[in-house]
Length: 89
Figure 1 (cartoon, one colour):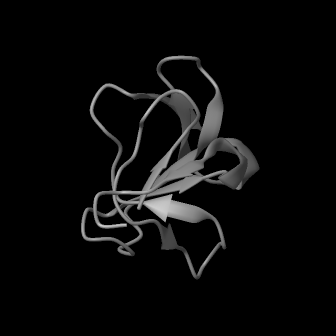
Figure 2: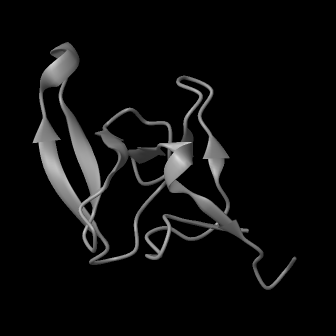
């Protein structure tokens, strides 16, 4: 399965459901597809994730939690995602 924001492919691979927040999440984004903005709202440090193509808010990236092998968790709003069948479908 491949999950993508509409019109721009930003993530590939199987989606993970984060047990801690309930948001669809990924380990990493495709290079050059995401714009990152530091976000210190809500009393925490996180990184806002925006589409580099259309500047739409996609969600947030959380670093240093230890939940993923790459130690970066991209929590993406499900309304931003379209499911495409991969080659193994």
